[in-house]
Amino acid sequence: MNIALLLEMAAEAAPDRVGLVCDGKRWTYGDLLDAARGAFELIQESEAEYVALLDESSEAAVIAVFGAALAGVPYCPLNYRLPDADLAALLDRVSPALVVGDEERIMRVAGDQGHTIFSREEFTLKAQETVPEPESREYDPGEGIAIQLFTSGTTAAPKAAILRHSNLLGYILGTVEFASADEADAALVVVPPYHIAGISALLSSIYSLRKIVMLPNFTPEGWLGLVETETVTNAFVVPTMLARIVDAMEKGVTANTESLRAIAYGGGKMPLEVIHKALERFPSAGFTNAYGLTETSSTVALLGPDDHREALASDDPKVRARLTSLGQPIPTVEMQIRGENGEVLGPNEPGEIYVRGEQVSGEYKEKSALDAEGWFPTRDAGYMDEHGYLFLSGRADDVIVRGGENMSPGEIEDVLLTHPAIADACACAVASVEWGEAVGVAIVTREGHETPGEDEIKSMIRSRLRSSRVPEKIAFVEELPYNEMGKLLRRKVKEVLADT
Amino acid sequence: MKPGTRLKSAACDTEVMVIRCADGQIECGGAPMGEAKPAEAAPLSADFSAGTLMGKRYVDADGKYELLCVKPGKGSLSVDGVALVVKDAKPLPASD
Image (cartoon, rainbow over all chains, first blue to last red; front, side, top):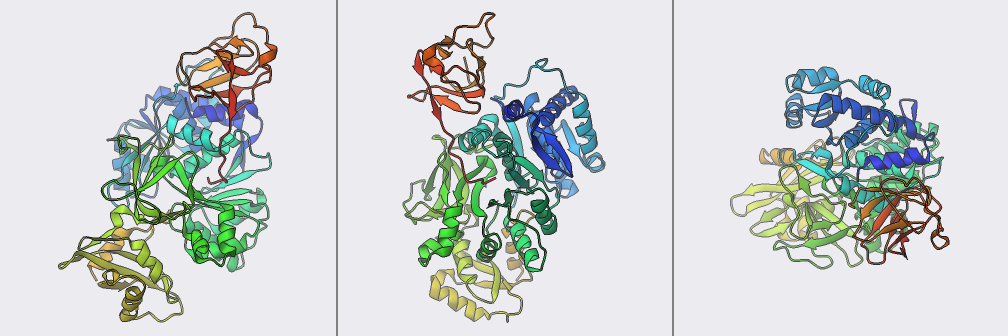
């Protein structure tokens, strides 16, 4: 089955209903399907083996993803923030492609790679002009790859993760009720098109007939403005965006946000302070923390609105702690925590998170990472408490191994962040002659506070955790390095600590 | 028959996509479904006339068959004379 079915069904059920608003232009489901069919023609003519997008979010992303699906070639949105050399290397890996977006830049960095290049406007216009007659074309049955996404490469070179039509449809059909949205519903999409959350937002909104409102370039003011003018009901943000929105509101930016019913977040660790403030700023919105990976077609666990409010209202520290959890696995996915030798661990035992289900691809262009029983090792480290709430402690690759003892950066960071003078903290491995690896920490001092002394930090860790967790190296930095999605770049912190 | 095949009802407007199937006869409104519509419509059986709903998935008790309704109609779905039932999605609190 082909993911284009999602748009075909929306267009069949409600051809004249507005499905997308971008830059003030409104597209009905009928318009979008016509343009996707036109894009099919352009892709066939070009004989491209991929459809790549080098652009911010726009209608072109929707037309390209479904056009590529109809034509049976993988859709591959690329990160336009990458430096030229990295981008050229990725474009080379998908050559020959039909590339939509920044024409001038594509020509400059990959002009000799045999691509067919369109600007956004040209692609959108031509797709609308070349719509084939109904029933006149044989579209791809959707047995292959729908989407290829390069992972962000925070630890190594980007890997080409593959999502099949069956993975994405498994996720959407299993978790979204067709046409379940009210005609007044609107989802504000600000995640860039090359992120899995941006893609799953398009697919699930279209299948539920929830109007998509796109904000290609995030600013807190732009976001708040669109919430008011388009009476947005649902929104997904990454933690840094929510922090900036709350900050702007505190500084006096106002908007009517009463229409907002649901705010979902994910893609990185949410600081407790931010979620507390956001819960106060948006008292009528339900908050959902979604945990997922590219390789799992998006969400595999979530902490729902009731969990958020319960945690906030509770006096029980265990229930309050749920605000820092990722919630529980969704019903259509199985999850296990496994130890170093692959053994399944019980509640509260830290290990690596494994998932299995239709939506889990776990596949890269080079090879599949699934084990013989179909389980995908996420390389995320964490544990599940006795009630099934999942807590993430970091990437398995980030675990610090000191003299054979495994330590997760998360537990050390959580203790550091309880210090009133510490605004942000990162723990990672530093080389140690004696232990192989030891703990190093980078600390950002909170504005208006004295920098805490090294001895004070060491004794705090010693008293709250174990002496093995006491940092050998401490660096005080202006800020920690995050990528644009709010992911902490630990490899950069390691470099700083190595030079300290 | 294989997953991804689109089947049409001989007795009403219903169309389904096959998500999962085995060797049995898939029917709608009491008549066998096919990839093409027959020239002459089959009569709608009173026993299989509860109707299909767009976007609903229909399954058998053993989990061997799963059909997604992509066009609704007056007939209802069955395999070898045994009615299929609706399988509900498990909607998430809008997470994306």
